[in-house]
Amino acid sequence: MELSSQKLMQETISPIDGRVYVSRPLADEQQVLACVEQGALAYKGPESSWKETKLSERKALCKKAIEQLLSHKDEIASELSWMMGRPIRYSAGELAGVAERSDYMIEVCEKALADITLEERSGFTRYIKRESLGLVLVIAPWNYPFLTAINAIIPALLAGNCVILKHSAQTPLCAERLYQAFTDAGLPQGVFQYLHMDHDNTAKLIANEQINYVAFTGSVFGGEMVEKAAVGRFIGVGLELGGKDPAYVREDADIDSAVETLVDGAFFNSGQSCCGIERIYLHHSIYDEFVAKAVALTKQYKLGRSDEPNTTLGPLVRTSAADFVRQQINDAVAQGAITHIDESLFPMSQPGTPYLAPQILTQVDHTMKVMTQESFGPVVGIMKVMDDNEAVALMNDSDFGLTASIFTQDIDLGIRLGEQLQTGTFFLNRCDYLDPALAWTGVKQSGRGCTLSQLGFDQLTRPKSFHIKHG
Image 1 (cartoon, rainbow, N blue to C red):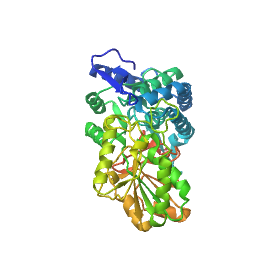
Image 2: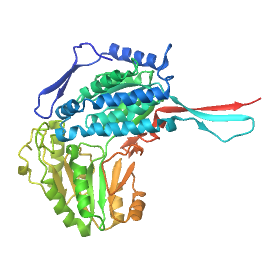
Image 3: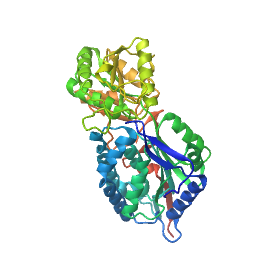
Image 4: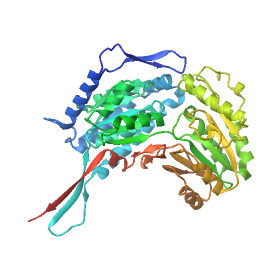
């Protein structure tokens, strides 16, 4: 749904240079209601409806939309760098992930949405259908603006729902790119729409009786606001929230592989990932070797403007985000933590800017916020542990539970340790990756519900049982 000019404007400040990169009018209440009505009409007819459209046609349209999106990958990569600060050399990679996830969900949707037929019982037919919900609201963040949105959009549309996308004010062009891709693919009017909205109108939209499900990705605070707006509605609310994801490196691990994997897991996207590595626990016997190699590798990063091709570490999304991480580091140092990266090696890292050098901290503990509070920036704390039991206890000592990683050559033991961890996804010898065949979910303050995998369709449909007696 395209929006007319409004007095209330939304501005996107680029972290690259602090200038306004995008300015868009905000939808008013009347436009929001019109969008809802159009979506509801597209869903249920009366003459034609998306929910009655054949699954084969929905699959074909979704596939074509993703192809349309990927045909603009170079322009999109530039827009991502300017809107949220990811280095241009990495920006297009997000669209490869969009294709991977979309292709998988399209591939498995027939099986995931198929009727469940029960064993025969004389004189009876019994089965369970999966019915679409209606109008789905997807609220997406800026840090992986296409990936997080597509996790819900594609399965929602495949399941026969209509979608309204509310994207972050930092990445409004992502919503517009998705809308254009689905429009160019030939989706009927109203099946996929977007709105640029303020918080007040977003809350009103969640409370609207025609919204049947909300898929939210963002902060714990944002998740609380969504729950409050939906209270009393008795609708499904999927929440993918924060993380303070841990890793444990055992004494038998491949140290070089663990260092390379975990440093990348901590600092890719400037640490602005809900499943990024924010705390590392090392067996005491390999502690010194790991720290030395991790420090050496971290010093190789190039902090710079996101639009420069040699930059490997871009600015954080805004200065306030960098200030938050700086304060965490300073507080930890005041409590006895040791910094291992000289900030002067990264000249662009300056207070009062979104540019921040990567940092490795040792001599940290769980009295420090940097080890318990989500950082969402390029800092990682490293602690020495004596054994597996201490590592597991520390990994579970968190309000979050999105992912956790263990590095070991003893696969069976690693799995047994993973079974003790309070987490939505357990990694062995890798981290910071979403396999679309696996359910993406979290425990504790990392959220509830799941996206991706065949189970992701369960969130976006409702079961309807058929109990038929013959004769």
